Image (cartoon, rainbow, N blue to C red; front, side, top):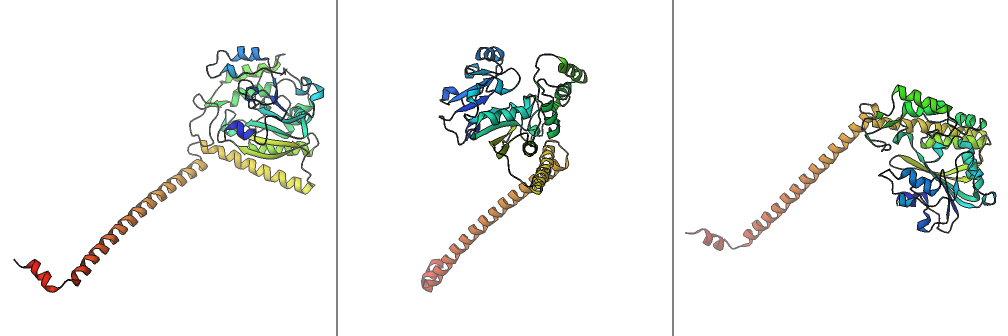
Length: 345
């Protein structure tokens, strides 16, 4: 299955869908017959003008935008009558840009039907330009929510500059991509980004940084604390750049002991996931161990090939022996005088 088929699994084109920020690459495209309402930061003409000079963007894929969202809550731009009516709420590479992740997820809760699904594609910090940024915590989500944050802070803009890295010209890669990363900004650039936090207009940035386990932990804790009423039904990694999550309304009902056990499990998994990114660092213990494992696997494959060749040669030798034994047996059955007649001059 391709990316869209994976994310849209279980949905039909008759389902009522709201897609946030489809931009030039909608998952549930209207042209393909999906019953979808879209929310974006500009109308179609504005999006076409924005990407007109980008050779990597096919602006013909940009579709009409139903609701323009330039700040505040998504709920502010979607008609009240449509709340709780959507079979699916979809957002691909949107959640990391929001200034208030709790309000964003609460909006998803409100817009989705009680049995609807919330589908998210989220950058995996291990496999994209957020490589050197630490995962976001539940406390940072609570702070943004209680501040009613509508703009990114100076610290967020600073971190965007300080820790952003690329590999060649790529902004996403696989977990074992050993190409050397390159920092995208200098110290002076970091200060320039810091000053973006004082601008009155919205300036975009990655605010929320996740690996799969840290995202699951944040949703679990925010639901346990009563800020959300969501549970994650499934979470799946893409080989490069991102992971996917499918959420439903209705938090998990856990006892205090069960909650602590779940939190501990996710915290441990987060450490393991973060450690996996050292596969990209030549000379790291994990990279060295994987290199030795690959060498051992190569030796095993070579040994197996040699064993197969030896078996083939042995089988050939066995065939030749059987042939010779047959000839010998035939000779033994012939009368002696016929044998002698062959050897007389």
